[in-house]
Structures are given as structure tokens and as C-alpha cells.
Length: 73
Image (cartoon, rainbow, N blue to C red; front, side, top):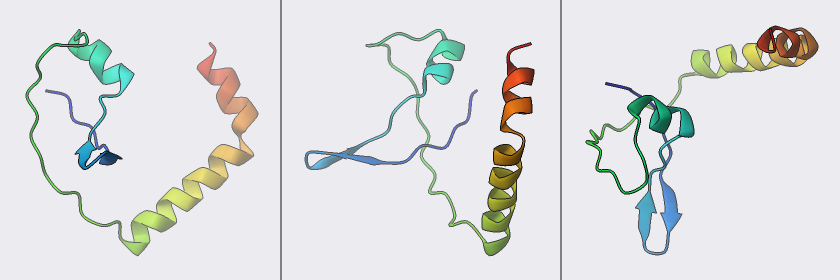
């Protein structure tokens, strides 16, 4: 089983959830295949969650070149 968190996107009068390319690849799925989906509402982020993300974003920005170089090894 693969878990991922996706946002609902408005399409006409309905909402849609996309399947990220990496999930589709891991499932070896193709357009038109049926997949089993379980729905669970995600809790709102806490102040701590927001703080951790902000710190991570600052670190990524500060070390962008080094991270890019590492990803290409």
C-alpha cells in the first residue's frame, strides 16, 4: 500500500484528487486502471508543524546548490 496526501481540486461542480506520477509508477498503473482509494480527512497543521516546515524551507533555500549537487550523484 502506498500512502500520499492530496488536495481536493474543483472541477466543474465536483472535486477531484490527482494521482502523483511517482505513485502511479510505483503501482505500475496506467490511465484507465481502477485503484482502491481510502478517504480520511487530514487534521489542520499545528503551530509546531508550521514552524518545522518554515525551518525546513529556510534550510533548503540556504543549501539549495549543495542539495541539487547531491541529487545529481
